[in-house]
Every structure is written in C-alpha cells, then in structure tokens.
Length: 471
Figure 1 (cartoon, one colour):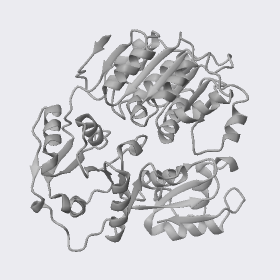
Figure 2: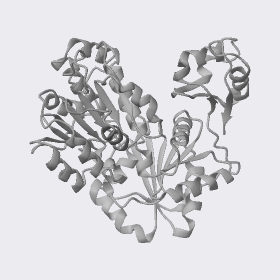
Figure 3: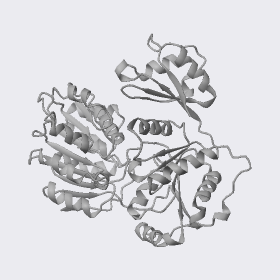
Figure 4: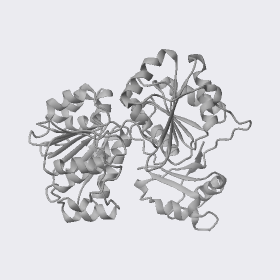
C-alpha cells in the first residue's frame, strides 16, 4: 500500500479547489458553498480519488472527508445514465442524512441528479415507490440496503463508486456480513473507498478483501490539540456520579457531551440530572428512531445543555459549537478517546475535555498518555467549586410541529409564521429542522410560550397544525 502519514499541514491548506480538474458545474457548486482551500484530508485524497484509485483514509469527523468523496463520485457521474452509479454506506441514519445533504449541496448545479437515502426506522412503501426509477446515488445503512437488494428493488451492478463511511463503527455495530453481501452485488471494476476515524485490525482485513492496491492516507498528525484544555480527575467509583455533577457545576459549559460506555449508564445519568434541575438527554441504541431524531434536534438546537451518549450512538452528531466533552469513564481504546475529545474545539474555538477515572482505570490512562505522546494533566476533585445557586438552563427551547416535508413545509414558512406580526425577531429563532412528517423550531426561552401560541393557534401556509413545547 502507498502510505501518506503524519501530514503536518495547518487545519486549512493553502491549495485551492481550482487546482483540481473538475467538471465546471462542480467547480461552480464548490464556489457557491464557499469552499476555497482544501482541508488536509481533501488535499491528500482528492488527486487519488479523481484518478480512480481505491483508497483507505483515516480522518476524524469534521475533517472534510465527506466533501472529498462527494466531489469524486459526482465528477464522474453521468446524469443521463439512469442507474445507480454510487453507493455510500453509513453506520447510522443521522450520518446518512448528513452525507446526503452534503452531496446534494455539491450536486446543486448538475441537472437531474437523483439521490435517495435508504435506512431503517421508515416505512418501506415510500422507498419502494422512489426506487421505481433507479437513483444515481444511494446513501444508506447496511441493514435497509440489504433488504432492498433481497427484494430486488435496488440494483447495484452498475455502481462505479462504493464508499464505506465510518467503516470502523459499521464493523463495531456488527455489519460486517451485511457489508460483504452488499459488496458482492457490485461490479468488481468499481472504485472502493474506506473512510474511518480509527484504524483497528478489522479495517485492514476488510480492505484486503474488497480493495485493489489501495492508497493509504492517514491525516492524524497530532493526537494533542492546543485548542483543547484536557484535564483528568481521579475519583472513587462510588462517587463517579457526584464527581460528574461537580464538573458540570464548576465549568458550567453551555453545551456538554458526556460519553458513557453503556446504554444503561446514559439513561440513569439523564434521569438523575433531571432531578438536579439540569436539562439532560440520553442517546443510546434502545431509542426509537423518532426519539433519536428528537434528542439530536434538541441538543444541536441548543434546547438541551447536556447530551449523554454511547460512542456508537454519538456517530453522526453534528454540533458546530460543543463547549465540553466529558468522559464518564475512560474508553478502553486510546484512539476512541482522542476521537471523543476531538468533537470539541471545532472551527477554531477553544474546547474543554474532562475525564473521570478510578485507580482500576490507571492502565487506560497510561495508554492514552502513550498514544498522545504527552503526560495527562491530573487535577484534584477538591478544586471543583459548586455555585450556591446553580443555574444552567439551555438558551433555547424546541417547538414540535406536526407537519413536515410531506406537507411541502419549508423553513421559511415557519420563520414567516413566527415573525409576521413583528412580536418575535428573526434573531430570536434558532435552528429549524424538517423531517418528512414533523418539524422542529428552536426559539429563545423567554419567547417560547408566545411562539407556541403563534404556531398552534395561527396558520402556517394557510393551514392549522398541532404544536407543542419539548421539555
């Protein structure tokens, strides 16, 4: 394998996209999106991707890898050829939605591109109807993709580009056999791309089976970010929950992602925090898809201050400004630890990473120190100060609306319904998220009741819809 390791470039490379030989519609889309210079992962992968090479790349979430493979697959796509030419497999519905949105944005100037997302948690009927004409691009999760293959409603024999995105997590989630069955339905002449945040042995094994002489790219030059304040607190196991509360009370971050190693811990902690009058939500594998959507929407819209999640459940979480990451327990894998804390300090902002550990986790701590090449900063729990009157309320609240894309609802319709009277200003409205049958609108806490009245008692596009506050 060709290897390109330890790239020392700055977060934004100086190499412009105009240096690449791309179709003109794609260059226009890239310019419209405001992309000027390539990120390190784009700079290293795109020349090989555009050359048709198989590739395996290790790059963390937020590195620009989605745009890299999206540009490559769109550049060679033939919109006049009505067959599925690209397939992107993702571990979760949330990541599939994000990937699909990125591809759609970059394909906006290429006429007649049909992209379809296929994942569980949604009825098969509408998906079957959409598959009556083969889409050019399919983005989805392995389980649902395989179901469509078995029903003979999805045909992959013309796939030119196959992408396994966050391949490590798909393998962790037990999708190995499904992935191999799916790949067996594609042409051997395809280009196969593996993107992974970590590089376990299982990744090399699957690469050996499905790729031909892949280029191997690693964009993980440093395991220590100067923009992240990373501290470790040694605690007694019986006081772990109390220590977590003290950490949050002391630092008072506006948004906190707490990582637990088990689903049960997530739910128990969320319930306990509610007792402390802290707005916490749990994200784990036992939630129904509708519940997952709601939790992620509330947290990303700043309507909940604390999200407690397992590693697998947190994949696909897209929060631009995450103030703090807290490890309730240390991960068994130092690579996973680095990936966790890398979710804070995005887009040039400062971040906080706090980890709790007991004496029995000392070996995990030493593994992290060795992996990041620097000693851990150990701080005593006694230094944590809890304010007498702790107030840590989220700045926004989310309103649920019982209508979505199926009713032809657009973000502008909801924004207009709220601002038409002039009582609520546009800047008091936050993130608006649309799904097929429901919508969510984040508004400032002080305007919540007024906004709810406007949406519930007024009209949106001339119709009345049910609305309620999510607490």
